[in-house]
Length: 216
Ligand code: B16
Ligand code: MG
Image (cartoon, rainbow, N blue to C red; front, top):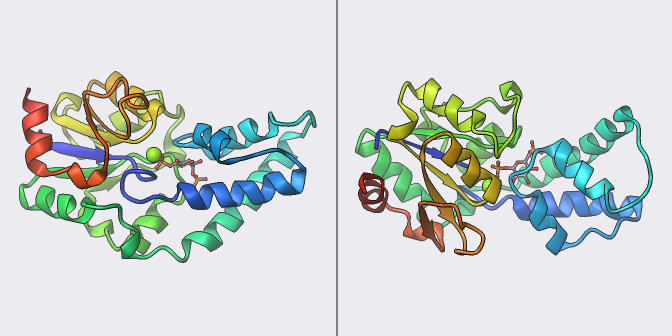
């Protein structure tokens, strides 16, 4: 194992609640029956694809321009919310894992679908741990396509087979697997069926666990 490539939302921190609240506010305004259960479909999915999923709850038709305006409206609200993120919002065990990886000379990258990822890493005060943050604006195909994880490995200068990818979404696990990397899933066995290794919580993620699992 030469590198670990992390997803952000649901792995490093839990911004899903803020995404939910921001989308909920938009859905309420549009009179759409959006709830927490439906929100699960949006995890790991890009902003515009998330909007399409929400608009599918109603029958109204929107022009592309209107859709961009609605997505912007959600994002402005979301950006207000994430200003409140602090290092206390790191998920359990993540900071110690990042430290362990750094000390062991293992490279670290971020492969998040979020355009707000660099700002969130700064708010969490973990940016210095990352050798590379994939610029999602340059990625043509979202997860489950392997492009974002393959780009992370290429930017780090390592082979995909020497990488471990960590994800909390099914599409993310597929992306890691089809990139030819070892896939670690955070979640339940039902959600993470295709992962090579499943942990229930980020607190279980240690250097030893990743090294020994990847070697097998
Ligand atoms: P933004 P991840 C994803 O982050 C979120 O899970 C998903 O809900 C969100 O729509 C997407 O980022 C895009 O985020 O609107 O900030 O660009 O799980 O890939 O780290
Ligand atoms: Mg995620």
